[in-house]
Length: 177
Image (tube, rainbow, N blue to C red; front, top):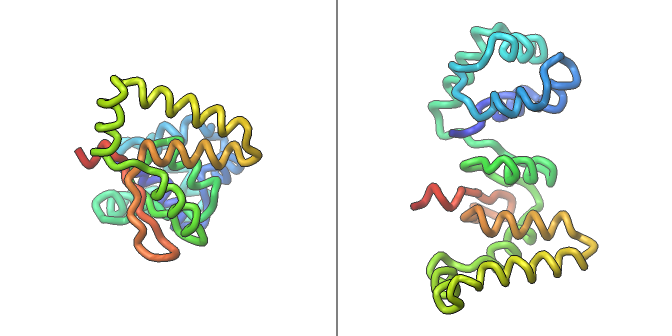
């Protein structure tokens, strides 16, 4: 299920971190809520959002239901948002901005499904483990450890479609089976 809460908050110029700072709702509660259908949000969460964005709870729920039923996706625009979406394993999202080289590098280092199966078959299943160990060792030696780990996680979890030089669509691999 797509993260309707984050899409709505971004649409209104705020995010979960800002909402936590201005209300008595915890980050954990918001993270849990973001995985749910808007119809199942608690009254406390909706009221807190209402106070933050200046809309009535009814207007908020109506808009969230429209977002839920639409093709609208979250647009990550910086490294922190990208990391958050990957860590939460968001079903689909768009990475927007000057990330073309970053995305192209990930796509170039990602094996296709067929290549991965062949590699694992040829190595009696040890190939994935060996690749994981080598990547970890290499990443620990790198100054850009966080970026490298994120690249590795993305290449394992997501299929990437470059839409243009400023936008790329990330979709969980498991959704394509």
